[in-house]
Image (tube, rainbow, N blue to C red; front, side):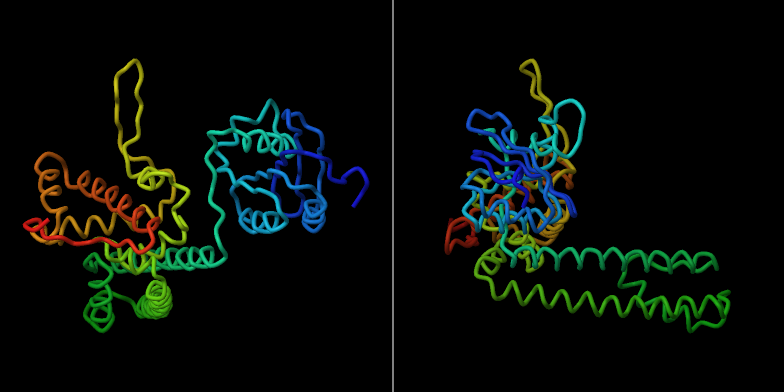
Length: 349
């Protein structure tokens, strides 16, 4: 390491993460820059090994969790900031050193929101969910493509994966339709590809269910209506222990509450935001929609509440409201050891 890049007694370091080059800006206790340096991946860790304990900030991006764990193990206090919260601190023109300085300044703000450092197990679990989500999208693409091919020959197949898989073999076996031999071969090979993809999806589902059955927190989460193995493990992977939320604000973190645009003393509430973890929000809303349709409302305290909501608003709004309530209950289960959802008959509660 060159002499000019030796650690100086900085209170705060901001790191702009790259693939090969990392830019670091150090601030003193007064917030003034006292060091600006550029490192490669291997020399960056050597720099923080030599540096005294400090507050280290970086943007949330690919590789930030790994780097944060490495630097935290060296005795530093590490904070990961969402990129959109750093942008207001970027002054004038933009380059990597200016970005690192903006990160160093943003991380010192007392009201700043940070991303929780997650364990490798949670990252592995989230990767498993992302692989499954990608394969589910591929399955939908394959089905839609085959359905479109059939429509080119005047053959309409029912919507839905189950009906499609039942109808296509009959379509391929029917020699009286207008399908050409070339198109039959294309559809047959694409259908085989779909079968192989579904075998892989089933394998991932079984792996996720096995993880859920081995986790005490996941088992307790599955006592909540609308949460199964997929949603329970997705919550664990994304929120970790959920202790970063001081109150049941996990519903707001998932953007399951209305956006607000209020001014002049006039409150204006809008629809939910599309920011945040879209995959987890979709899982919770799907579970809530299932509850709205199938929940035995005479056996749950939520039943009367759902009836009251449906009497005055659209079913979609009721679904999102129930999803927000499920997220709040999930926060309690995740943050209180041994807590689970207790189903109580309204007549005896």
